[in-house]
Length: 199
Image 1 (cartoon, rainbow, N blue to C red):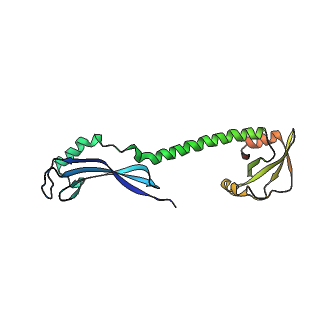
Image 2: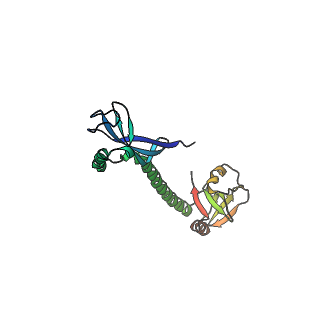
Image 3: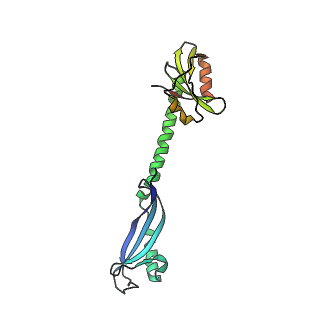
């Protein structure tokens, strides 16, 4: 379950010398600006709007920007350039960007590892294998010779690559396939072998 929504925080709050239009009190009018930000699991993602209003500390009247007089609006415009969204309201975007970078680095390292493992196969290596059509399966190395590799295929296939992790503990076929080391490299270069899993 994803918990998401929005929240707000004050980014500007100041008593202004104007009179309250409701109770006529002097120096009780507080101008407030709030930023409203979206969040997921209470981690702010980004601000998407602002709420501007005055609040009288004497009579508690709450007046939105649309009902401000010209003098109060001019005071707001005077301070507007100093009113900024705090950086923490973008922190969720920072987390997402960091996760993307980590994912890219991890994927790059996985490709380097897989390339090295294909060049030097070991008994017990498991290959993520693209089957003709639209399926995926696992292929296990059960033996190595100077010029060839012995492989067995998993008994099951998955329609999605992400489903391969469910096949890791599934049984393998008894038929052994011999393949030349160069052919193994070609399958990897053609993206038929997608990844090498090595414990």
